[in-house]
Every structure is written in C-alpha cells, then in structure tokens.
Length: 211
Image 1 (cartoon, rainbow, N blue to C red):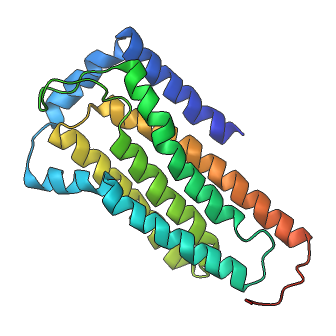
Image 2 (cartoon, rainbow, N blue to C red):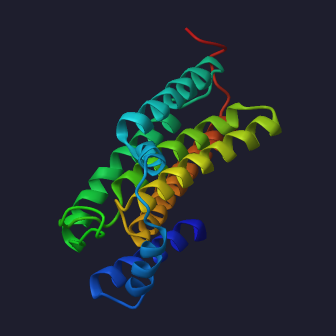
C-alpha cells in the first residue's frame, strides 16, 4: 500500500505547486531553460509517448498474456490483461480533466497555449510500457531476459520523457507529475495481478489446457 501512497502524495505535491505557482516552478523553469534544445533526436524520442507507438506494444503484451494464462489453465486468466487495459484507459480519463483544471501554459518553445500539466505523452509511455512489462515478467523464466525487459522499459520511458523536455513540448514538472500518476496506476495493476495469481494458486483449475 505504501507503494501506492508515495506516488499519489508526490503527485499531489507537484500539482499543488503548479496550481499555487509555488517555488518549484522557478526551479522547473531554470531546468527547462538548461535542457531545451529542439532537434530531430528529441522529436523522435518524444514520439515514443505517442499512442500510435505505445499502444500497439501494450496490445501485443495483453494478447500474449491472455493467451499464455489461458493456455496454462489459470483461473481468471482474463483479469491481469483486463487490468492492464483498464490502467491504459484511465490515462486519458485522469489526464484530460487535470489538464483543464491546472490550465498550465507551455514552454517558450511551443505556441502559446495552456493545458500542459500533466504530460499525456509521458503518462501514456509510463503506463503502456510499464504495464506491458509487468504483465510479461511472470511469463519469463530467464532472469537475464527479465532484467533486459525491465531495462528496455526504463529506457523507453526515460527516452520519451527526455525527448518531451528536450524538444520543449513539456516542462520537467509536467513529466514528473505524469511519472507519479503512471506509477500509481502501475501499482494498482501489480496488486490486481498478484491477487489473481494468489487466487489461481489456491484454487485448482478444472482446465488442463486450451479449448
């Protein structure tokens, strides 16, 4: 439960600073000034947070997880992939009203507009790649492969986050807020998946394989 409370508290703190124009925003602006250098590489990295890129990755992980769990006769095999899909659906459900509520202006590198906090692209990357990793990890037997998957997930999320800040699409705090929001959603997914595995382990299945 602590893993859920910490990101929510951090998200609340960052959101409060954005709404109150708190001292963190001065540091945020200085960090943005130091990092923003729009170029082709930052544009490509920011694209990792696009739904057209991240969602197919999650869709493949959902399909593989559902197939593997059903093939091995796991009770409630549908629950982990359904929870992963639900976490992704919650991203726009939460982010869109938060953008309207905070009404934060963008950086000088983008045309004048508001609604930049939290970063939807960052939240998409965190939840899509993170959920795919959480779902696939229990299916992998090799520790080396599992470590490689976690490392790849981290690189994709950090790459997208860096690209968004470097290109000037978002302030650093926009990205940090989405990290916290995405982390809370992933903790929820992990809790649901663990509960499903415990239930399956304690309840013998009548199925011996795929039908």
